[in-house]
Image 1 (cartoon, rainbow, N blue to C red):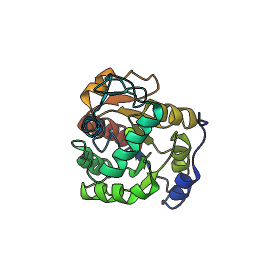
Image 2 (cartoon, protein in one colour; image 1 turned 90 degrees about the horizontal axis):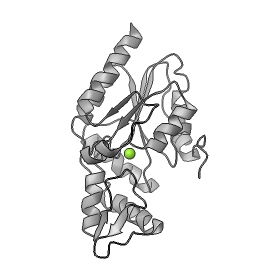
Image 3 (cartoon, rainbow, N blue to C red; image 1 turned 180 degrees about the horizontal axis):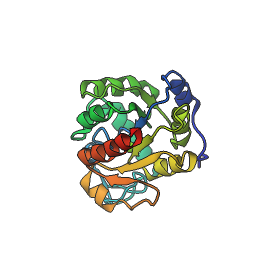
Image 4 (tube, rainbow, N blue to C red; image 1 turned 180 degrees about the vertical axis):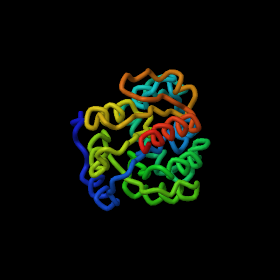
Length: 226
Ligand SMILES: [Mg+2]
């Protein structure tokens, strides 16, 4: 298991190119936060005779062969996810109101998009898609827990609020351990997976609605500058 403090050199190199300044920051994940992921992956899986066994927030140890009911091996699950991104990275749909709420919050804070995207070559396609959907912000591709990348992004922003939005409990935990000053939003767009996701004690908000998330963060950002 990767060390929770670890961060990969590629992400840190990308972060080194981003302008740092004493200003609030919003760090936002992509899959299941800005772009639809679970329902799209389910359609992709169904075309291959695969389904999730349970509405449970895990990708591995949850895919079954629809015909036999047998679980896929971890390697087979990883292959499905890899193939999904190779085929669909340019075709994912926006989560409702993600774009207009990011634009609203960009008046108060810098915005950086931090994504764990398999295949470095997929970054350009993801960047182009986000731009076409009105979400043209700096994009960092990361591997593994996000705590190290978030800590690097927080540099030179002491005394300014930083927010981190992600659907993955392990990413939220990693950030909470590394940078406890960062305010966390647990966001899961898919209503079924949102309903079954556990409540994490260290998050400020759990949401599946961008309008609610925008209101919540804007209130804190406005309060911080008073
Ligand atoms: Mg995600």
